[in-house]
Length: 319
Image 1 (cartoon, one colour):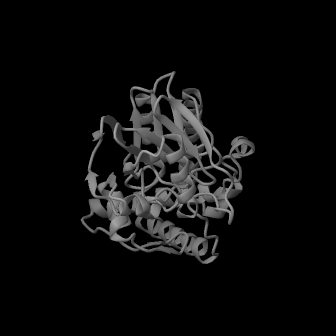
Image 2: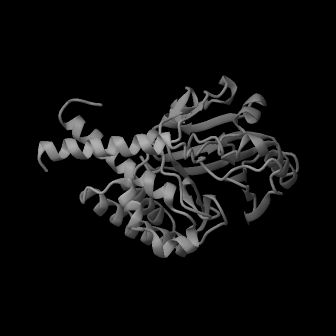
């Protein structure tokens, strides 16, 4: 590609990105929380392990001996209902630790309540960074204030490994740049349960938050990793939507392989965002997954952003 062509395509991308933001599409990170959220659904995954399915995200509670470990904490709007559900399921055992799979607010709404009672907050270092500062997300033009100190992570890690809470050892699997730059999946080996966080959605297309590090290549890498961690008998708890089987996870990997390949071809063909959307790259999956406008737009822009940053870094001129 010539320098003139590169400049033209970068101008087109910035124009599309500006139009996308200024149009005030302002997609939420998950599903909109209703003023009166529906009753939370619980799914027992084994002795001492329960999934709590909420209106816009899921959480998993695990018995850790003298207390409970919570993986993700729902939205603040229904955090109290979540914590009461966990208390009811586990005979009022205290929650001694909460692990955030990423920073998005519909998954971190119980941080303050758990932290205020002395519970440990665990997260990837990048997630801790986002939670500790105001985040302005360019593509939605929304601002998210830093969480209060009591709600911020108190134990962080940089890479995949085992984390211990009480008598529980859990495998934390870092998924670099999948839908943010701090995504972590949690694998409960004894129960053979994999909690994916927001990287996987089972009631619609996931949010590919390129402004805080997600991109299409990272999403495909994450799916490859999750398929390797799991096995044919693994129960999958996605970031939102119903519990999944291993076959469901494999089907998503195949689907995203097809869709992202089409998006990348559109990029190589110098299509604008509107032109790419007009090709309907998700057509055969929309009946199952719903409207894909947000996903395709963010996926397209995420790839532009990743390639631009890689190009600038190689030149020694980090944007």
